Amino acid sequence: MTIKINRKINKFKASATSEQEIDSQKLIGQNYIIYFYPKDNTPGCTQEGEDFRDLYKEFKKLKTEIYGVSRETLKSHEGFKAKFDYPFELISDPDEKLCKLFDVMKEKSMYGKKYIGIERSTFLVDKEGKLSAEWRKVKVPGHVNEVLEAAKKIK
Image (cartoon, rainbow, N blue to C red; front, side, top):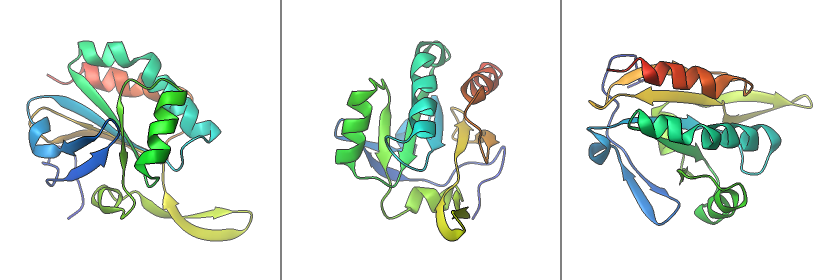
């Protein structure tokens, strides 16, 4: 079952930083952003997190929570979150359950070698648990501002 705009997201539970368990059923009633990034402490991923951090108060005014997701361990995420003072939780998805639910595992290529990795992607979910907007193959510059504009349009 792939996700589609205006359709409910399948239920999920995932472990996150600050000893949180993120349960999609408990997120009903608020908007949220779930963004997938390849790796902690890499330039693009750090910048994307900093951009979400810098606009976090604007998202909170819109009653929209933010969650970052990658396959790293919670320990790695805790360090990454603390180092860059991210005010939102990071979800650890080592078994790729969430990655598969959102269909972000894609064939990539680096230095001529092909591998399967996370395609940088962002999803905006409304308070009913329906997918409101999605961005795939994200380029970091300007992206978070685009997501904020979309969040402003949710009723």
